[in-house]
Length: 285
Image 1 (cartoon, rainbow, N blue to C red):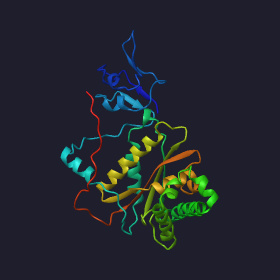
Image 2: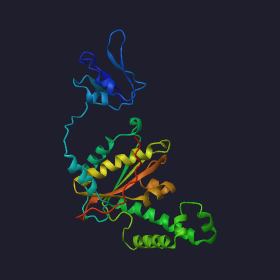
Image 3: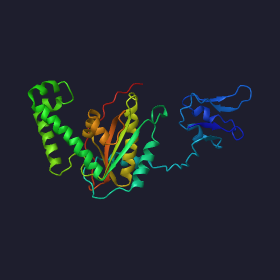
């Protein structure tokens, strides 16, 4: 996206220059006119959305209007504290336009240098169960490998070591697989939708951070509408270790999955907050 300053409208207030994180806004030494040095511009749009006279335009359309809702801090804090992972869903599909609105909210979340390299795959209805089956069979295969004495030695040096070192964890994995095969869904909990966020493998530094930030914004927004969510690490791990499963989830081959979460109308309500350990903090000043 290209941003342009219209100097016929510009009042030279300097707000855009102060706001620009990449120092792309320049002022002509001779004519004093403002301009955007495109090689430095990361198209974050901050110059345009702070301009008081709408002197900055884009080749991608007008900036959407926004009015500060001014949510009382204590209410926002209470809402965030009360967001829980939901593992019980009503048998009710989510409207497509609702999901699309959530994706739009996620796309407005900050990304490193405004690269916006994340991609989303949305699974609904039968596609959720199909992906679940692929993930379950991956873990079923892992169980068989662990039962092989020779492979068990090799797997001690992989992520599978947690199942080898703990017999109880291994038994839980077996029950996990068997429950799904009997019609249950210990993976996606019969959720009507699953969201998968991924980023190109080249985005090693901030790809995961960008996906998690966008996904978090989507999950908190969904909670405001009574729609629950839950992060699914089992699916994320399986897709990154098996290309076939990643393809089944609609994820581009050159991407790495960074977040998978369910979406659905919550079939449970909570009356209190859980007890959590206090976040360790080190203050320096």
